[in-house]
Length: 479
RNA sequence: GGCCCGUUAGUCUAGCGGUCAGGACGCCGGCCUCUCACGCCGGAAUCACGGGUUCAAUUCCCGUACGGGCUACCA
Image 1 (cartoon, helix red, strand yellow):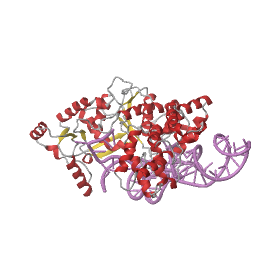
Image 2: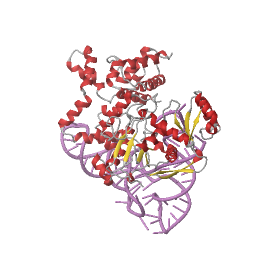
Image 3: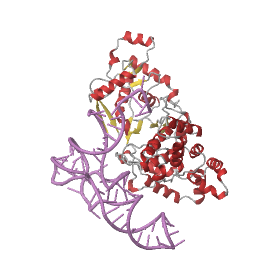
Image 4: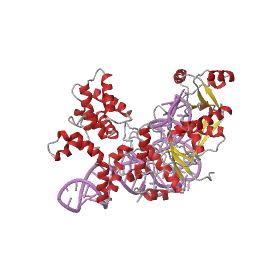
């Protein structure tokens, strides 16, 4: 069905820390492309202007490269189908959306966010499926143009058919059928003029001649909408391949609350990229003949989709550690030493740490005990220490959870920004004071009640490591 | 609530109608060894349930249960 050269892509959105799931999906995309002599494209989906950041985009390149993924085309390396950053393609989406408007496949919707919210609430109460009720579907042409003229804000929605079924043909799962009446009139163009994921995704995949859409299972329910878009444009649809979702130990979708997920963390925690990739390859996929340790070339030569297992694999850190140990042990001593120096005792980190502990030192060898928590992820703080004077366990848990959430939103991990978050938290909560919150944060972050200045320390440790400490603290305090 | 996806030991998986259900992590025991780790040997532990189809179901089909995802002007 597809005689075109294989082209696949990953399309992360630069809204947070580089995610292990991105590497997971990226790996399978890359392997499939390489196996078929095709191309692997990296596209940045930064259509959410309120959440996308440059820092996050850079971090994606850095982390994906670190783990060993290489792409043939992307914002940073260019290519014949650019630009590869969606924020630079706004006009393309608008032009295409205009075509849809013209062909009656889409319509302008003037409904307020407020009305939509009430509508959804009502539908939930009535136990009906929550979807747009189509009020603006049949607006008279004159009204539409007059309201547009007068500057009323609007979005553009896809006009989904009222009857019939849409079939999603998934390479791994076969035919998945949807009643068209179940499918919402998806917003295609937001009122800020930017496209939603759905529009941008379909337009780009077509324009970039993507042949196989390999993405996570969570996208299955929106695939019928995408198919409707391909049909509306009169385009050939790609082959859809929905991979299972990585899971937490409790089988929910993997999340930073319950698992380390930031690639930056895995790097700092001392995992080798080759072990990471090898481990991710074993999530849902297996080599023939029970081989567990293998490299990319071996995987590529053996890869086939029918060896995919569809149940969501639990991301098991212990097994990753075992595998990583296998790789570490076979390294020549000098290589291992080089990696420790490059990753654990990174030049810049050591410099920062030395600055921070200098005034506390009386002997050179005190460097080691004074700074050990900067260089290891293995900090276990007992429950008693995590509950400072004047707090109880429940309050400590709440504060740590809240702080952790606020800290998540800090995109530029600098001491000033960290301090601002902590101070703002104290100011807005009457049941805690500065002293308690800072001490609690110190203990959570460093595992100690005595440390160099807190904010500078947290900055030097880096976001990934700090977040992990908060996660661990939460786990030990969990009721 | 609605719509989808999934279901082999605690976890990752092999299996693709007839197997003593294989491997790995973890766990337990032993060996190696100055200790630990590594390595080696051994052990406990699995086909969610109920109906079909079939001479024969872990395997195919249908239900149920359970788990998960989606249900935004986020991706």
